[in-house]
Amino acid sequence: MRIFDPHVHMTSRTTDDYERMYAAGVRAVVEPAFWLGQPRTNVGSFLDYFDALLGWEPYRAAQYGIRHHCTLALNPKEANDPRCAGVLDELPRYLLKDSVVAVGEVGYDSVTPEEDRVFEAQLALAEEHGLPVLVHTPHRDKAAGTRRTLDVVKGMDPGVVLVDHLNELTVGMVRDAGCWAGFSIYPDTKMDPDRMVAILKEYGTERMIVNSAADWGRSDVLKTREVGEAMLAAGFTDEDVDRVLWQNPVAFYGQSGRLHLDDVESGGDYEGNTILRGTR
Figure 1 (cartoon, one colour):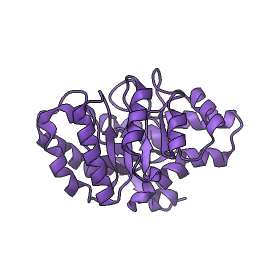
Figure 2 (spheres, one colour):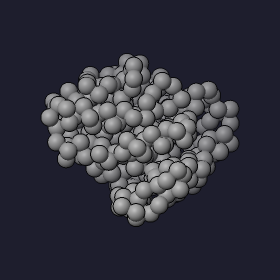
Figure 3 (spheres, one colour):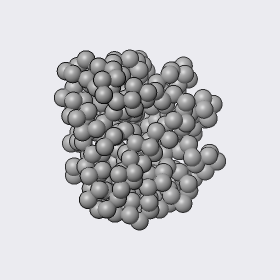
């Protein structure tokens, strides 16, 4: 089973997690820029973070046989902080970087006028740079927040929009809009593997994206693998699993023209933290 985790915050995880992920079949990840758990106090702290996502984290992942890409944005939660407003001025030069495969996470947290402004500004940046968009839906009143999100992105090609953190109440409206549908699988909150399988049975596998969204809180980098196993147990085929866990994220982020997966797709292996190319 090959796995592409399209939304995981590895900067908050240990190298033990990279080893576990590789053993479970994970060969590629996308790490979206997000809130670190406490407010950033200046634009410079964002830039240091972006630099780490572009340099250090891909290097760290490569030591364990995993290809790392990222998405960059001013996240919705910090869009409300005037100290962070200058991030929008810095983003254009970062969106030119080769390993940036989308603008994200953008969208809503508390659904404020400032979040509206920042959301729309970053959608414009995505269109200007020819990048797809990863959209965060709010944790509170998710159905209303998702409807508002779809109103904002209505003028865009839905094929370049991935609306994430969905559930049974929101998947239908996103599917009707033609956008990609993202689901975060968590130990206690959000979605779990059995609920995910039920949604896949009802809606099919087209434009469906499954991620662990693992971060500094209670989460699990192997939840994508659990979904694959639950799909097989429920009668889905190996091809169905590969479509959801590999082909779909490759198709979505591949629209950036910046996915580099030749090494991991050709079956490179590693020992310890040294990758051995082409040994299979």
